[in-house]
Image (cartoon, rainbow, N blue to C red; front, top):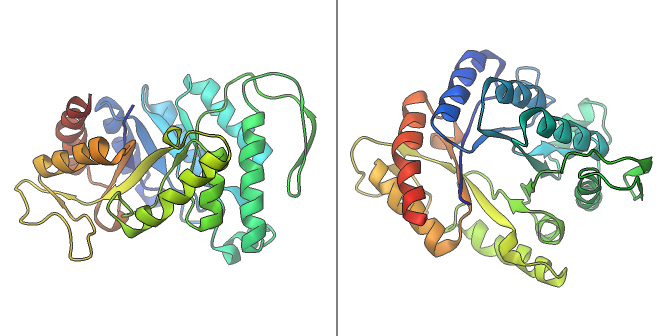
Length: 296
């Protein structure tokens, strides 16, 4: 399955337009609504409070926090939050997880700073633990370096797929060992240097762990303009996607799926902004159906 989504704002001042955009995306048949997670900013909505409300306002679309700030959301509680959302929505949730960044801001929230090595180890432990805490079964005891639980019953609800926002080599290897998908980041597409140097690290780690690399989806956060008329060129001199007409988007995304194995795309506006309602309508009504038909 190829996933098509849209990224929406977490700004407190944008609540009304965000609700409209979410409902529009749901009516338009999109698969994913995504929000970012920066709980240290007072002018931003809490990501899980927002995604819960958006899922409550919609009927078919799934939600994704892209990606959960793991240092501020302990793994066992994150597991409870996500399985609860899954139970409430009929499974309309994907779990995004990140190593963490902006450590000074994380510390201002009262959480301890970790070294880069500690952060990656905690990230892998966190993914392993959350996967144990869904789908029922025997109580879980886990005695890790960063996470410990004792005789904790898993939720009966299945744990949704775990997609990461890994960037560095060590966290990319974690994605290969234990995750189900990878979100390379804004503007890092299948032709980018980041993808060319990063995806092989995921694949190698997957093989070393006895996993099939093809089972780890790559879903792109993909910013650009949707124009009424074709552009002379759809990529900048540095190779970055600029955008183009619906026909140009359709050609580009169809090639990404068929020739490069792309598993999905989340639309953002230029520079990673939230798309406006006109762009969102063209995405859902013109571009996405045509790509779905082309890729089968």
